[in-house]
Image 1 (cartoon, rainbow, N blue to C red):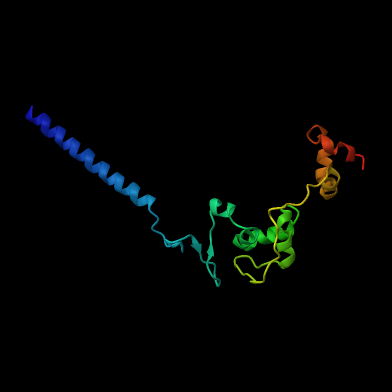
Image 2: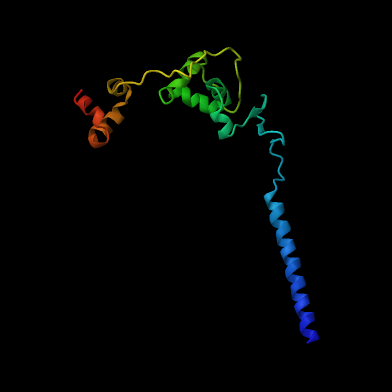
Amino acid sequence: MLKLYKRYNTVLLLVLLLGTIIACNVAKDKTDTSNNSQTANGNEIKVAGTQPAKQVDYEDFKNMSLEERWRSFSPERRNYLRQNPDIYPYYKPFITAEPNMEPEGTITHTNQQLPAIDTESPETPKTPEEWWKTFSEDRKTYMRQHPEYYPEFVPFFDK
């Protein structure tokens, strides 16, 4: 009986030791040991030759003004919006104020005062005819092929 307890204690000790080693390795893997330029007081990202830009999480982004949002975008994102200004028309004043494409991989701001936008009183909604004029030919073709999805635009299919 004594041999059985010794074996039981030995097996239990090995299982506990193995569990401790595994738990330490898992905890070690979960901690970020790389030095990737993120600081403890914020998610600052350093881009070569520029001041650090703050990464913004969704909750902060929702509470930002349009100008703060524009400033928080990467140069790549702002360039994309410059190339496609109709995707988000409320950024058009910023695109007009800063029309030049930015070199990608750097973040630069002109620090000029951008136009104020009254976000409390949005533009009057576009009529279907106004929307129809802004659509590309590919989109119009698709809409003509699927009129059941776009009943308000059916009168414009002949134009």
